[in-house]
Length: 334
Ligand code: 13P
Image (cartoon, rainbow, N blue to C red; front, side, top):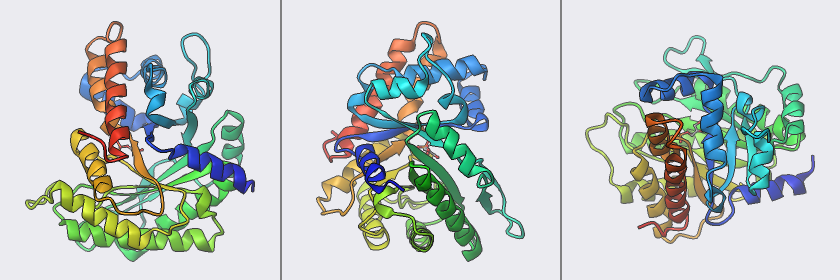
């Protein structure tokens, strides 16, 4: 393992005033998002839309890297430049989502396990050859009556660590993503408990499996009230409780912590990150964003209105959301 190289890549991913853009929607998810705005879910439309984001003029001022989907890593710009090269030419780091999505967890109703470990060493070798420098694996934890179970948290943490070890072996920085879903009527206190238990299990597994935390990025959800909870915590409370939980449960050696937007309102996701930085606490790791929907939503809507003529407008919208979140990552968003 070339630890120096991993550390360098990880550091660049969370460079000051920048964050990561997730454009790694699986076929199922991109079909849902395209469906909502009425764009046919064809390979060419997926390519054209991702090209729009990758080549948005100026986006590299705010975005350190983008997470691609398997298909996207193999696609090219209209003038024939492979997407990973198009990113590198603009000073951005190409990443790859390597998990294969979730399946029901046996004997555990309403809980899921992420699949994709079989053959992953070989896939990593190919992804590295195609130019990917970091990877992502998303585990999903659901809060509900009697869940998450210890079993669900443990098996997902175990799989995340196995993936992270294979990523580092192949020279890619693992982004480990346990997403605690926003769905449900749970309180913010309950979310904080589940985040703590999930992060504890994850870092125990990473340690046991020899994963180098200084070459690892944590991608996580924030500590939030469930979206159906009648009592919604305000921005300052979300910021305070998220920072407290992270500081207590995430080791200082981790190279960086980034958030997913996870179905939060776009503006809220920005305000929450900004508020965390306004607290002015000394944090052991850079704290930034790795948003998908939180950055893409307005761009996708504009593009869908006229996929031929609205490209520049959609690009400007993506850059604007990236800029807002980059400012928030330094507590400078107004
Ligand atoms: P959202 O920010 O839309 O939640 O997406 C980020 C991501 O990569 C989820 O896996």
